[in-house]
Amino acid sequence: MNFPVSLDELIAHQEHLTHRELTTDQREAIAVWLPIINDAYEHGLDDGDLEMMDTYISRAVNHTVAHFLKAARAWMVFADESRTAVKA
Image 1 (cartoon, rainbow, N blue to C red):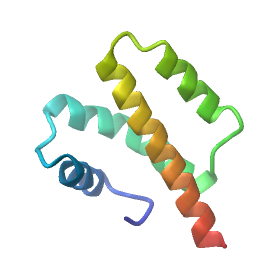
Image 2 (cartoon, one colour):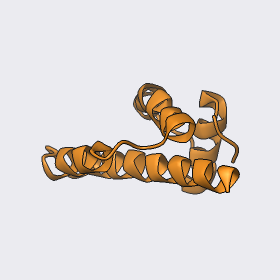
Image 3 (cartoon, one colour):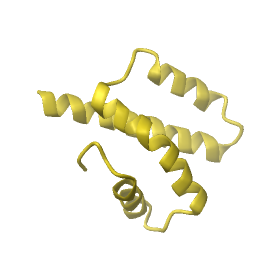
């Protein structure tokens, strides 16, 4: 996958990984996180970004929210690593 990624590309990739169509709520959640993920690619992660995500994950009200936040965190890391690889 190439960054910055479009909403349609990210949704298609997620559906491919999960072998199912995403729900409307899942699509809307990805749309909210997409600018953050692309920002991680374009500008890198700040020192506190991952710590903030870890705090959110630890405070998640249920497994579904924690799972989504873990996935968003992983996408942020992947985007940042992709940025680093391109510049290397």
